[in-house]
Length: 200
View 1: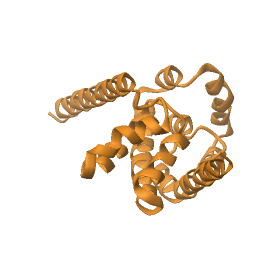
View 2 (view 1 turned 120 degrees about the vertical axis):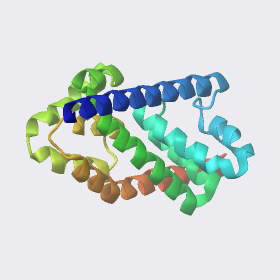
View 3 (view 1 turned 135 degrees about the horizontal axis):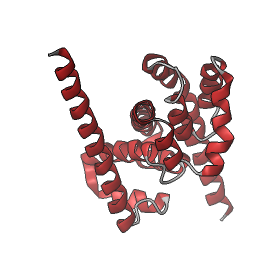
């Protein structure tokens, strides 16, 4: 009976994951048809009329862009700050990126290397997959890479799922390290954008 229950649970988990991925892909296709992902301005124009639903849709966009990399994370993070202000923009970025990162990690744990290779570019995968050979040091390398935004976070989350790292350790690492990189991305890009506007 226990094995039957476990098999049913596995089936439902696979169905739920497949449905979730299908929904994300549909959202990406829909977003591309509207030009949401073409630029920060297009995303702002899409979210602006949504009122109280804007933050929820933005969080969904952040989740999707981690699981299915469709635009640089810095672009959407900057849009969050410009749309919702430094405080709430940071919160919405943080929530969306953390949820998306956990999903990416779990997907890699479940479906393995083939899934990661299908999502990442061959060049990026070859470059960063070498970190998988560092053994237990990978945990510290991963934490440093998340803290200092110098590597593609979405790919690193998938790669972490290919290691022996536990979901608990991964989640704690993301919760503690991610705020700094989000703030650096968002505020750095915001400062750069304001500087360019002054130059015009």
